[in-house]
Length: 386
Image 1 (cartoon, rainbow, N blue to C red):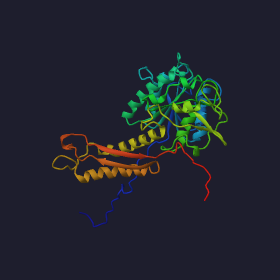
Image 2 (cartoon, rainbow, N blue to C red; image 1 turned 60 degrees about the vertical axis):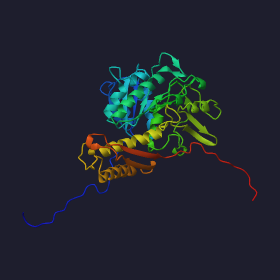
Image 3 (tube, rainbow, N blue to C red; image 1 turned 120 degrees about the horizontal axis):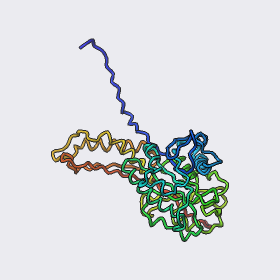
């Protein structure tokens, strides 16, 4: 028995602390050339600044100048210190080949696996053109969108969700020819036509940089984010965006990400953060996808420790009320603490009608009320005689 003494046991879960999730880490697949002893093709690297890119031989001049442009625009918005996963594919690789899992090498898959679920937004860029023009863009854009959705579906099942930002290359300048993305069902894809250049490229790095700089519920088009750090803004047709450009409304309605300007306000802003899906789809904007992806990761991290645990049940095999209350409180505490200010409300419902004793899967319903958005504001102004 030993000598009488005082024993003190430490309680380590009283604060209800939540596991951290990676909410702002982005990745980008680029095309260029290998650099001996510095940069290998189809190998993932993590950098934190443009100096990190230069360390691997990605410089403003030379074979990898296009790749440096995307990286530098990312850090111009996100700021130095933000983690960015990069991978350099062959210069001749077309946009769809970067996400083609049927190929012996799928660059995007390599990058996503190396990042281990950290990447919340994946940028796809290329320099090689497709074989034709399709619906107003390089045909590779729409083909890449289809393949990227398939890749995203596969990673969603592994609790490694992400949204893809595609380079809307070679816009022909005819807004009416563009595909209406509201007719698509590729909700984990966004296409940007924004560009700081007049060479047919699009500035994927700018979009990723804004995503990396803001919380999950915030739209990249929020005016309070501030103007983008650019002097000139074009679309990938090489035509300047200004107040006199008449096709912006049509392109906006087709849900492409573009630049816009406001009268009496300097600078360029994004028009929205649309994804390629129906306007009635809950996940038709990047902000909503990022919100639900964060909740997905929290739910998984919360309940994975309870998998195959033995629990008390009622005579009919359903969960004992105390167990149901425990499961409800556990997830609500985690989500409400981790997503404070990012959602309007959250509620968990435990289905207590399921006979788990018979081996049936316990169902738990998680309902999020997201933040709303003042996407349109109508001001009625007039005189009044009191």
